[in-house]
Amino acid sequence: MSGFYNYSSNGVSAPSTSAPGQHSLDEMFQCMWDCGYGLHCNALIHGHNLSAHLREAHGIYGSDKTRFWCLWNSCNREFNKESLSRHVEEVHMGIVYQCTGCGSTYTRKDTLNRHRLKMHH
Image (cartoon, rainbow, N blue to C red):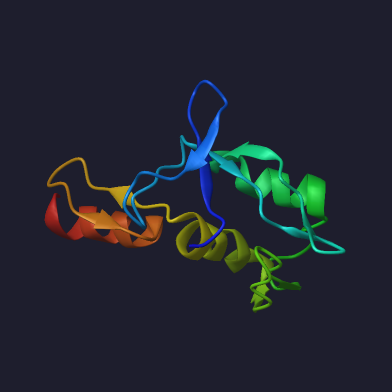
């Protein structure tokens, strides 16, 4: 996850101290979306605001099946719009979802929900 930074409540940037894949949607992240000419967006966003930021700042909108290129840190993989935010959360931001019942962690919210239904109901 080179170039990944999260921000403490005081706004000072520092390389992430969490283990890879151990971040939450409540943390602040620096947007690493490529804006051309070798520059990144660099906006500070809460993880839970990623979809809105991609829509408003980078024009990621349309039907769920509309195709977009992931420009986060020059990733350049193509996704349906419905999968792009999930990809950025999982691969580039290292977001994990933790089960409050047993502590297991998952990289996808739908996988956590499936686990909860199967193991805790």
